[in-house]
View 1 (cartoon, one colour):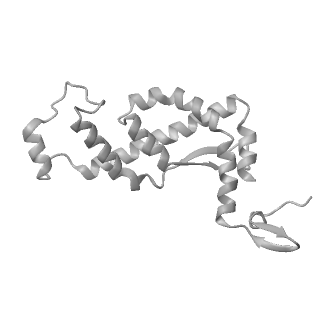
View 2 (spheres, one colour):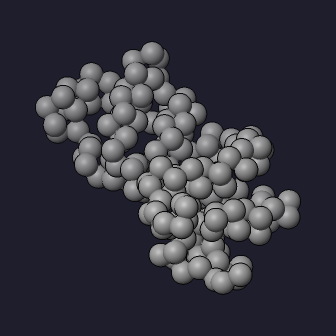
Amino acid sequence: MKSESPEENNITQNNGRETLKTANDLRENMSEWTDSIVGDRMTVDREFNDRVTASEFSNQEWGLIMTATELDIENADNPETARLIADTENLSQIMPELDTVQSQMSQMGGSPRDTGGGSGGGVVESIKGVLGLGSNDNGSDEERLEAAERLAQAYADELQSHLEAAGKWKQVRVAYQE
């Protein structure tokens, strides 16, 4: 059996004719490897919950972050350097929704992240915020984006460690390449 080049991996044989695989075909292959680790992800989700609780994100915000994050395997063909990575390219698109969730939580009596001891602001800070004189929202959004990216990658690292400990990492890498 001959070895296939990356270009040949995207070509199928159909009655002697070569046909380029569609994007949908490629997505199906990608979903097969992620489908194979659903149970492992559930286990890691439970174990990782303490990290989420200790972070600046609520469980609802974390759910949005993970919905926008795709898991990918970097260097899947090399057992020594293969790494599960969190592709957070789409996170910036959901940041406004994270702000909405945080705002809704504040309106319902405060965020679970409130520590109760700081100078939360009150009326004067609220007025400053409305006038754009309060905290720098752009910096805050960028900091939250970076925190979300770090937490998502920490999750990917934890999942890879779990897969390695369970003896499934090689199988997952191979499935990813198919």
